[in-house]
Image 1 (cartoon, rainbow, N blue to C red):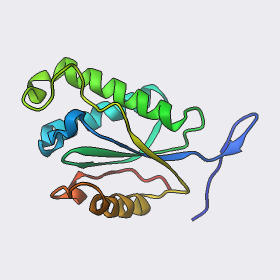
Image 2 (tube, one colour):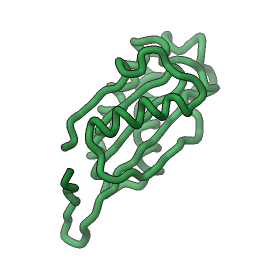
Image 3 (spheres, rainbow, N blue to C red):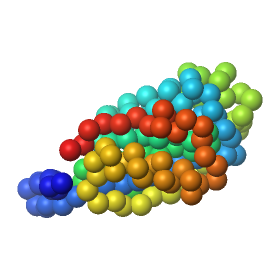
Amino acid sequence: MEVELIRSSHSVGEANYHIQITPAYRASVFADPLTRVLTRDYILAGARMHSITVAAIGFGDDHCHIFTVACKNHSAAQVAKLLKGFSSRMMRKHHRDLLAGDLWGGKFWTGGYFYRTVGAVNSATVQRYVEHSQRKHWKVSRGMQKNLLQFDVN
């Protein structure tokens, strides 16, 4: 696979991140398909607002993996903050009823996040990585392959 570098007037490079975020209290809110779809859509909307390219999103019952590519203007911390902030605000504002039994205290995500910089990424690599990483995490979500949203980043 040939790597396409990002070029700007003063730089050339590549910045891809794997970010894993967790709902507050490690609640299993993503076991509900509607919560999973709404959260995914808000993460993607937040990414579009900030010109962040999301290559894939995968969910376990109690966490979310996000792969971003070509993030030349944002650090991993900024990406996590922007995506968590927007999706949390939208979920709490418009779908509080879905979260009432699992989340309280005015928050959707935990304060922290996991990140790793990754090299050249294509959709097959992302799918393999997310499926493999589910085995390493706290528990394996049923139907993980169905929960992976893929974009072709070749």
